[in-house]
Image (tube, rainbow, N blue to C red):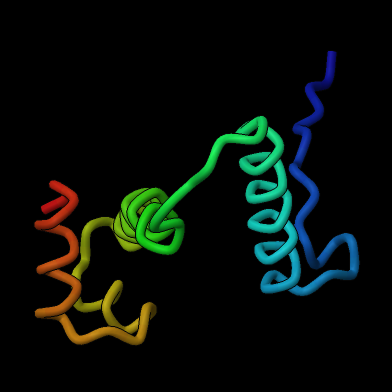
Length: 93
């Protein structure tokens, strides 16, 4: 019996850019967030958004670079010290 590996379809497979795919994901998440508010007010949404997004963002980048801060900083377009400070802020150091 032959096993077939199922590969997740990527943005490029669908003819989309990775940036567009990410933007669409963020848009859907925010639309769902507002639907789930059910009329309740929200304050400081920008700060809340950054706090909710930055930690998993940095976590995934660090895993992708196998914890290499220099490589991650280059990939992100950040100074290494800035990246170290953000990682420390989120307990990812």
